[in-house]
Length: 135
Image (cartoon, rainbow, N blue to C red; front, side, top):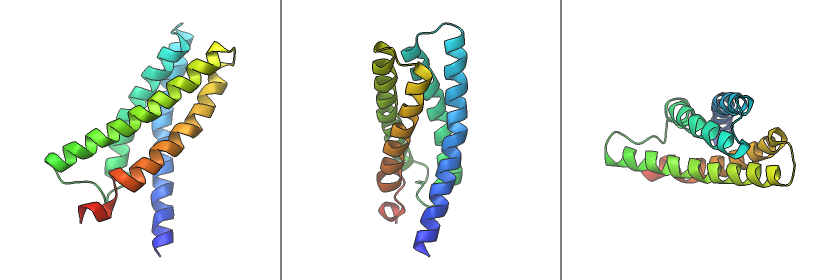
């Protein structure tokens, strides 16, 4: 039963990630089209995706582990942003390095998506929204 619940949370997280990725990639591609440097476009897109992801994660994914209002919720938001910034740093490094050596930034972004998803899922599930820590 716990395994099934974990699968459902992962499915909701995956859906939230896809929606936030839509925000991220939409901004990224629009900015590339406007002539923005790939690294900056990746940074801005990812940052907009962070906002979308917090809204979805805190309201639809990790409902059991969301802290009540107050200092604990503020701390949780800060940790969420820190996990997102780690994902952003990883994304920026991958896209920047790949672009520097001549790899298409869109391909680099796809690699960065997988790496960032894995990193942030692990941090958010195990640390930030861990329900047992709030009980």
